[in-house]
Length: 115
Picture: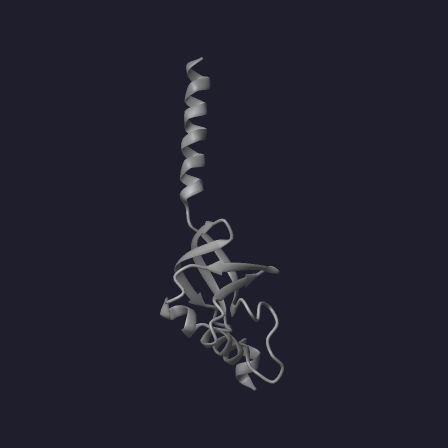
């Protein structure tokens, strides 16, 4: 009986820790107006900035899903508009409360550098 209670308590503690843990997403910082598609003839950055300046909130588009972003005044959102990023934070419903936003940098292959 003690083993069963100990195992149950351990499972409860692990699930509580996992519930409160930050999650990580990879996707594009966009605006709710743009979503995954931007205006023709504009870069993703310029389109997202223009929509945000018109009042459209920033969002994260990841794996076909659009997540709302809390902290709309975060300077990192503007800096990374239209870029693919790794975003770490807490998901509450369909809104991410970001704790860290990092741009994904692409490493050039050695064969391209030699050309």
